[in-house]
Image 1: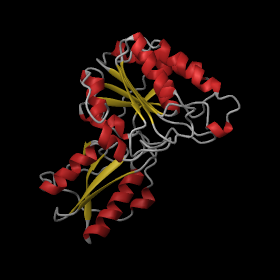
Image 2: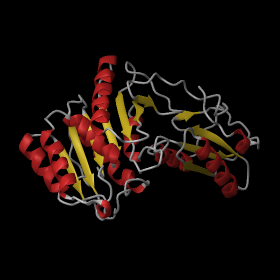
Image 3: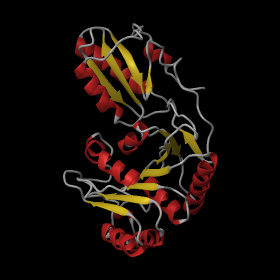
Image 4: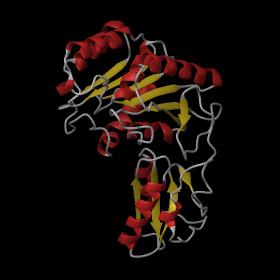
Length: 326
């Protein structure tokens, strides 16, 4: 498994955490919160077990998160800190690089999340596919998934990514995502959930519209026409949105989230989705302008998945409608 580990950043030697080490109650509570975060992430603990910290960072590997958490933990505790876990791998005294789990093979255009312990189609509870947002001229294939995926990975779902470095062929991307979901089901994944933000939310819905046999879709701040200030025709984004939501057939459970003051939102889309799903019988929840969250990227921090992740997961998994989603 070849990864850029930034060896120069880790010249300081850190003591190994004994395999028998147990987290104290406060640290265990913090670790439980840590688990409801998306990768890349790392959790560190001081030698006496009384201090701990965790950090997250985007990138091709968890190196940035490891560097950040060790520095912060040592500054906080004034002592040597050791790594307890990196992503969902509990180290038990192992070197974090040596403990890197093997990568499962790609599924069509889907690739496994790097440094993530996936179980494979027979052992996993299912597969959740993260589709990232996109900003013109920037490569988002190393961006971090949002925390909406974490409740599923805690339940034993494998985590894969649908990465698009450049977006030039929307129909082709959606069709290839359809093909990958079909392949994942043929491999034995019992459930497949599509989750995404912005362009990733749009392509997840578009693939479902085109017949992807997904069991659930989590669409947050769906967009692919750019910001309103750059649009010459604001009727097109909404008409294409209407075509997608009206064309999705019953089967998957769908969560749509739109935030206030989203500069990519032309308006009316929550009403469009609610009306379309009501007419077609699609089992859905539309979270329209949740209070306390504003802007296109409002789900990118810890707060939104911590508040809404549980009710999103409950609906996608069981159909339960719980606050604050409703």
